[in-house]
Picture 1 (cartoon, protein in one colour):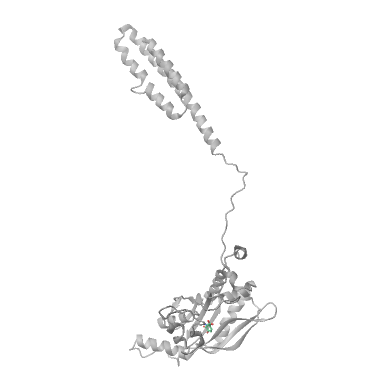
Picture 2: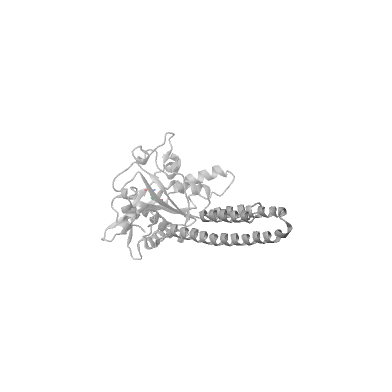
Amino acid sequence: MSGNLEKIDKDFQKLLTQAKSSKELQDLRVSFLGKKGRLTESLKAIGQLPESERPSFGQKVNELRVVLEGALNKKDQEIRYQEVSAKIQNEKIDVTLPGYVQAKGSVHPLTLVQDKLVRIFSSLGFSIEEGPDIESDYYNFGALNFPDNHPARDMQDTFFTKNKQVLRTHTSPVQVRVMERDTPPIRMIVPGRVYRHDADTTHSPVFHQIEGLCVGPNITFAHLKGTLEAFVQMMFGQNVPVRFRPSFFPFTEPSAEMDVMGPHGTWMEILGCGMVDPNVFENIAQAWSKKYPDEKQNPYDPEKISGFAFGMGIERIAMIEYGITDIRLFYENDLRFLEQFV
Ligand code: DAH
């Protein structure tokens, strides 16, 4: 009987030396000390012993159990220590290594300028509107008082779709869309993409404009001047001189172009503007009376309403602001260019 216990002890010690992981150790514990383990099983043989030997055999089994448990626990500690040390070794971080530099994006210069324009006009009480890039001939030209034979309607200047729509050549058609939708007073700007069949260092087939429109009962040219002069001060600085030159646009009468004084004492044209042409109001008025045939008062009666409008190219303003001489730089996505704007 005791010989059997010795064998158990010997086998156990051998396996214990071989055990290399907590898992193996746990298996070992179960196979010797568990309910059906070898030591536990050995107790069952106690019945075959003469009664006088039973207590001392029982005691030996218990002693061995204590020894085995002690050995297991000690080995368990060793293995855990080894496991943790290995983990620390493997996961060691060399804090002296240089870090990975995260490439940071920056806002595109055209977006920077557009955001600044939008902020300025928002602060003057203008709301922001949008319209479609693909327009009807009516919104892009007809409603804006372009005569049928106007050169802008020529294929040379304008992109047409197969079904005779146009890629809008300016943001002005949104004036018509908003006036057909809303009653005055209107004070809005329209930032957006526009398209023209044109390409050189200062012209791109796709570019951006901001349109402005202010319509109300007694809007005058003085409002136009005051608004645009305030805009120039906020955009280019307090004391930048401006001037208005007479010009022509089909949808404004009178029309003007506004120049600002550049750093080298030269005048630079920055926008077109004017008083909304009564013919435009007449076109809107007709759309209203079609929509509301019973209304006696037409909100766009050219005799009772007036307004001013303006439009400018965002690229042009950005080129002035940053001293850029080739418009194509905006679209080439060359990081050496783009990274300069932060
Ligand atoms: N639509 C004109 C253009 O593309 C710019 C313009 C001029 C807009 C005068 C206006 C305006 O609203 O009043 O050249």
